Image 1: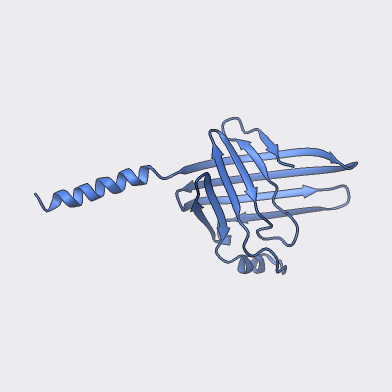
Image 2: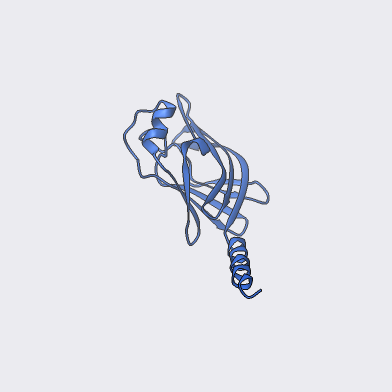
Length: 158
């Protein structure tokens, strides 16, 4: 019995630690029509994100910005080998090999290999902050926004 007690205590400690992992389950769809310098901008984002500590159960984000004459869209998902790092405010998502992910999707741009997406949660508010284009070239393809996880309301950061 004495030999099993330490193993049982270690198992229970592991369960307690597993319960302390930060968890995020978010699914949202956002849209905004905006005027900027006389030009109409159409933002659209939709995502499904499920994180448990550094484990990514699901990650998919599509972000679009359309102007009067042209538009850009970009997406990232689990097939791009995202990696999660737990931070003081939430998570930092980066790609294991962004160059390979770009190549698989047919993009040949060489900029922004060390990009990340910060996910910062405060109560029901989730701030999504991309540091630079994660996949689709040299411009900002992903839009910074805040989503209320309870109501689904979105606010685009300018």
